[in-house]
Figure (cartoon, rainbow, N blue to C red):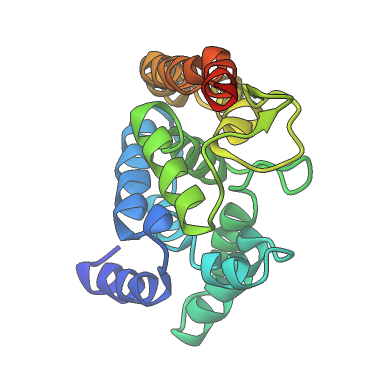
Length: 225
């Protein structure tokens, strides 16, 4: 890939990125992590990989406006059309389209090519550890969701919650993500970050739940006097 081609694709990516949790810096982190993983694999098409990393979240804006849409599928179609309009070969466009469509964790559209597996792992690594916690909190704030929910006077740890919150997202997605990697290097990087996320979640839960253990009874006592 030439520098000119990279800049063409990069500039289009920048035009599409709109929210702080999925900004251009997320794209660069995913790209750099993908390149690290790719260095431990064989037969990687770096042109496909770099292009897919740059464009994998260009459908986020549409999903943000309409949550029923899947940003991976929207982004895959947008990437295909953009690349075709710039003269890229159809086969290349199809490979990039598959990588982007398969980067979101779903039972359907699983990654098949090595480039798709690397993108999947690199993107998931960016929701691991401290950066994953930070990005999740940013996103929850953007969409107006709380840190936690309170059930029967107690702070829920997020397990089985129907209402969205940071705690619910951690239990539903972040806690178990470390088992979902395709490459050995991707798994190693993710595992090296796990302790930071576990520690933050535990500390947050202990801090916010502590006040609810005695606080309501103390308040009721004061109000009755």
